[in-house]
Image (cartoon, rainbow over all chains, first blue to last red; front, side):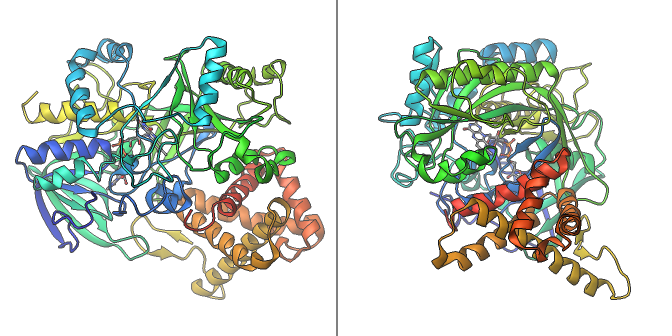
Length: 495
Length: 142
Ligand SMILES: Cc1cc2nc3c(=O)[nH]c(=O)nc-3n(C[C@H](O)[C@H](O)[C@H](O)COP(=O)(O)OP(=O)(O)OC[C@H]3O[C@@H](n4cnc5c(N)ncnc54)[C@H](O)[C@@H]3O)c2cc1C
């Protein structure tokens, strides 16, 4: 059930609002935080820049969804080398409203590194286990039901032939009939257990209020309170200035917007200097048989043989997504008309590189600059060759990587063309961004402490993907939620 | 047109026509160039069924303009400038600004920017192509 008619939604907004705790951003980090704080009886106001779009209002991965639920209509690019296009949700529920719900706990060795290198207290796998267990129960995380999709089956087949370890990802899709025909995952029907259907709803039930279509411009400390300057108004309408006063602020705008907001507010030390992402190279494969059901979902099979260095997964392969990939191959472009049912998109993903988030004077949107080191690029080259060999082993006739290569790859020998990915001619993408305001213990160059409190600012916290110390290497949402839960409980003195 | 950090759009130049008029002209030139790019790419890349050619073409042009409007503002400005540059580059290619040139000449210009040595011109064409094929293969509501 959605929250469109919930009494906790503010539809008429006064010029001044006061609350005890303002949560800026309603994605997984903000929603989990708001839920816990509201249930503890605190007076919580969630402020979300994007609109409230009923969960079932648009088909998952459609153009309509892009226009209504993504930031910048999905058109965002990080400058640097290679170019990385990235996508962020911008609606009530943030990225959870558009994502695939693939669910992974943070690997123990990643957490061990955070504990050792970043000197964070209480963050081992055992410390986080109870948070993961609660989240899994609350979201109904499990395996997809029934047969896996033909696109997944190809990845599984390639892995089996090469002796690679592979698995069916867990998902937070709930069994249900609502999206049965155009399911969010291609490997089973279900309904996104997005934030608007879960934690935000529960937060509102517990007394929180939610103000959508409202962008926080800056935060300013006045006496012992925070003043938030916000612009309120739906897209296309002239926005109205509103002032919000809060005792505590949790910033949960996501890995790009959170550092941008802090920096706009004059909080700059170490902020936005260490943006991380999972750099993803796509490979479109054409098989002899039909593998594409055309339902637009994300097939859930993945290869974890080379984890944590790289993961290979399936990607949305509807016709428009295939067409975008095939633009790189003009001579083969018309395959979209005839062969699309035999084609699927796969991706090789590595962690690495480092980026910055900066505000440009006179502009509203922050600039993202990102660079992969030569070593990271070499790792991605190796990963794309391994994925390529797996797809060929599964019977692919031709591979079309998202690199300017001159022509498709049709044999194992030709995979060596991926051995050195050209920095300028490789097109990467990502949907996983993090680490722009990482947590760190005393003496570390991190803008937030072990529990997400912003250093040098009172009663100001970060509660989203920005906090992750390094790449989680797995899909990040579960990590973000577990950390948000841990930190909110710490704030309440209940950890 | 540039937006201030918070406020309404503000004019970027003001000469003899006055700000509003100059902006209107610049905007419609921009739209004409975008229309021209959409027409040429649709004609060469996508099989447009004659019966609904007009409606689909309009849908694509509107989508491209809307997505341009949604881009991060610093990129939007850069793309607008590049689009004007592309329009004028038509003079060097076929003796006419891009949107007034015939399809073969337009297509040659697109191909030469796509294959050019400077990444900016390649990215420029790729940006427009991406939006056009995306809209084409995912008609409204899909
Ligand atoms: C297409 C796609 C598929 C994905 N698939 C998966 C998956 O299968 N599994 C997985 O684990 N992860 C997946 N992810 C990633 C996951 O969705 C994100 O990591 C997660 O949503 C990040 O959570 P967050 O709370 O940090 O921020 P977000 O989800 O980005 O939420 C931040 C919210 O804050 C709002 N906001 C920002 N600035 C302001 C401001 N100044 N004022 C008010 N509001 C503001 C934004 O509009 C946004 O709604 C996917 C992401 C995408 C885009």
